[in-house]
Length: 235
Image (cartoon, helix red, strand yellow):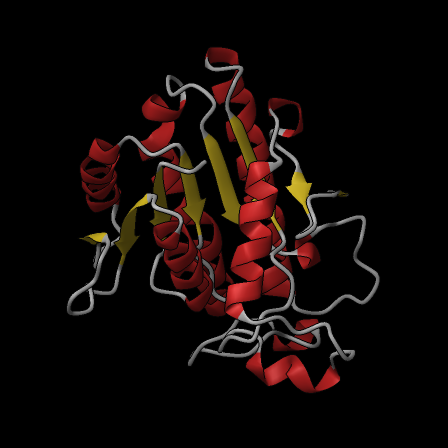
């Protein structure tokens, strides 16, 4: 049973659904977010508006006072006011590529670095970093979405590297990337018209599936990219 959960990037709809379900199960929920806490939040909320190296370190140190047994990292951007996913390399801009790499790789890397000492010592700790199946190089059959695909592939490598380093000090830890599936959020909204019936999940359904993945994690799968059903996806 979850006792204490830390959710980084905790203002997204999926993150909030995870928080709500963990809270309902009686777990202590801590959140780190660049958004300020809403009024009357039942969670311990660290507001990290800067997301700099120092602010990430400070926020993590504060949150770790609750001794979490599970960490979710939910940071990520597919599209925003700077642009939509590229359909062709002719649409690729270095500015948008750098923005996606910063949101999808640099920020999670800063938080993982801040967590390293704790994760290297906490017995049976579990870390789930939200990634995407489109970040799998060997699974890529369609192309396109250059910035997002590249950044998620880099995120998968980051977590693989990190898991190996942590495992040398704490063999009981399990650190994975997870494809949460297509969820009805602002991230997927522009692309929902092309989905097969039944493919789109609510945030609550996705949170429930992610928590089931968490419950099934074992150290031997640490470093893997997992599907929302817990199966291993190819890199």
